[in-house]
Image (cartoon, rainbow, N blue to C red; front, side, top):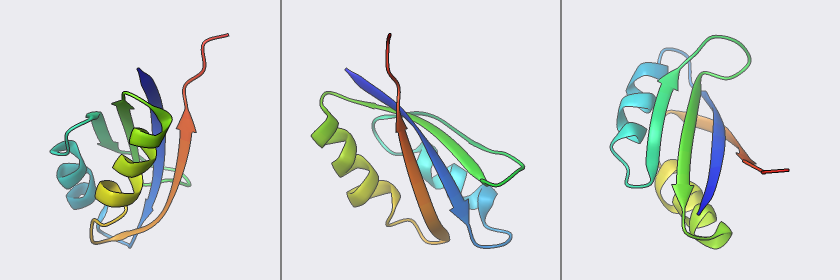
Length: 77
């Protein structure tokens, strides 16, 4: 299982709606709007890195109001 945090920037005033939409996507375990350089932080999981990439590109990035994403895979050292 691959887990990642996805840091998201949104259009002004869209953070809550974006977080709400993302929270409904299969594979997303948590989506919260936050303050700072990013507007929404998502925790997601998938079976493989490729599946995680598909989740981000095919599902998350298509949500209206998102301007940029940064995917940070979780590592276990």
